Length: 158
Image 1 (cartoon, rainbow, N blue to C red):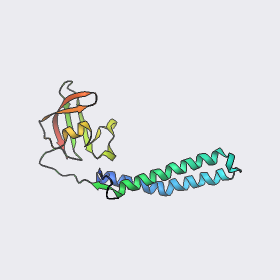
Image 2: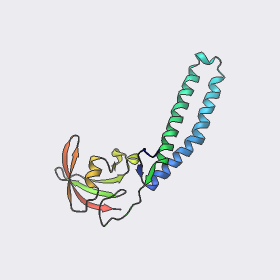
Image 3: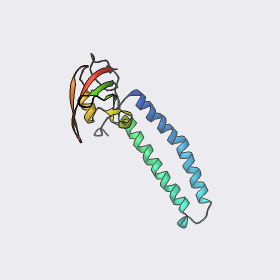
Image 4: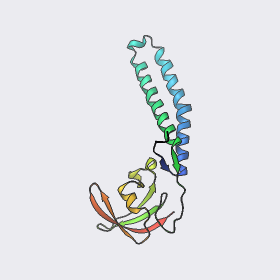
């Protein structure tokens, strides 16, 4: 497994994965086992759509458990450090779009924690990679699929 990629994430993101895994392994598997038991009680398994559906749910559950186990096994927990006022993983960065004047605050996170709609952007994303290792007052160019744009860094909170 040494060839597998590391998943960069915060300690909070790692803890959330461990919690989700525990839930799926306990509550999730118990629920699926109950669904299978109930479906078996309906009789002939060869024509039992409830049983087929329960088996599909079970397969998806086991797949999700395996995925989370792999992410946990290959997690690289990134400690938040105040790197002399530079944007780093875990930073909350307030920026102003130079063209529109719109102000947003992005949190720079690992790829497994990214949620762009909540302004949690991966350090590998166009915005995240443009901001990493920059400091307050700098203007950066973001090379995005929809075109380039500039952001001015107003503040950094680590």
